[in-house]
Amino acid sequence: MSSRDSKRSADLLGRLLGPAEPEVSCDECFEQLDRYVEIERDGRDAEAAIPGMRAHLEGCPACHEDHDSLVALLASDAASPES
Amino acid sequence: MPETSFSPAGRGADGESLEWLAALSAAGHRREDAIERLHALLLRAARFEVARRRRAVGVALDPGEVDDLATQAADDALMAVMRKLPTFRGDSRFTTWAYKFALLEAAVKVRRRAWQGREVALEDDGWARLADRAASPHEDAQTAELLGAVGRAIAEALTPHQRAVLTALTLDDVPIDVLAERLATTRGALYKTLHDARRKLRARLAEEGLEPGRATAGGTR
Image (cartoon, rainbow over the protein chains, first blue to last red):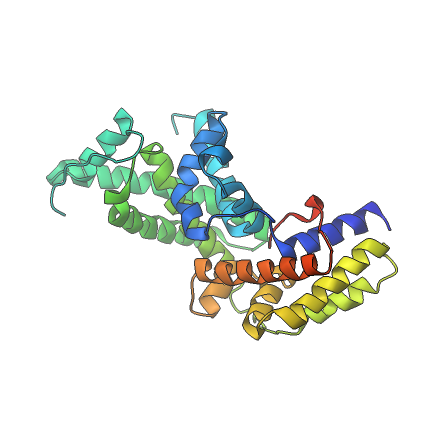
């Protein structure tokens, strides 16, 4: 079995089974997203501050994309603060 | 909107955030100016997200459509921000808090636009493809056993609705917002169905003495 096949199977099982840890809901994720991302940007332990958020971001791709976009937008702001 | 005195209940808003809150809850020109600045901020965030999402989902949009989607997203986000303003706790900067509304609106609109005109077939037997995969000579014995067990668990432990939602979201890669729109429900309600289904699958695997590794941690697309 090639490493590519192995990764595809792991990805498939991951999508089917989701995270093993307790996770927040989509609504709680949206509620806390801004705070979570700022804690991450400050280099502090975001998972300790908001338990279950990281597991949800692993299990829910839509919320994961919202998270990544907010991180990217804030990084863009920081790179060109006058815009 | 009546003038309100805001005192966010969170960690304490920074000065710039307090200024946004004061201006948006003021009267007359000060409020109108703040709303205009807020809309410009949300429009920039929406444009940013439309550009990101269209690349990610590979949807072809002409410049006019990009502008339309971003403007609609900014308009909807502005309404959401103004409606939710009393709930702002100051746990982040006001602009970070406001951005998330624009990003959400823009992402949902692009995902739905990408699936416009495409059928979403809800099938509760799509999981049967797992059996084919488990039987594939490309799978090692342990993975094949796990895939086979997951397939059986889907067949035996889940309700037809849970099977259909799980199949659409995890095997057919239907975005959750698109499925929510087609089923006239919400992202949160669908994810709850998915979450409950996943818990049942994990419980069934545990009963069989199977323990999926950390490598399987992941989500739908």
